[in-house]
Image 1 (cartoon, rainbow, N blue to C red):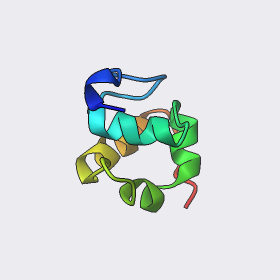
Image 2: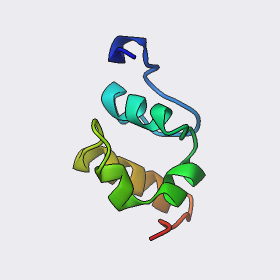
Image 3: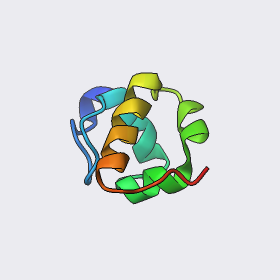
Length: 70
């Protein structure tokens, strides 16, 4: 899947960039709850998900009172 074909934003996730969105969609992750359950370390291991995307996701999780599974 080309990143041009990936939506700019998916589910209730904040905007984290198309490469990161693509990586999450491959894992069938479309919500913050699924991100939290997947775990920070596993996210960072995905091609296309970097520290900036994880920081943005961490901030969004904190705003909603959701903790990482790890």
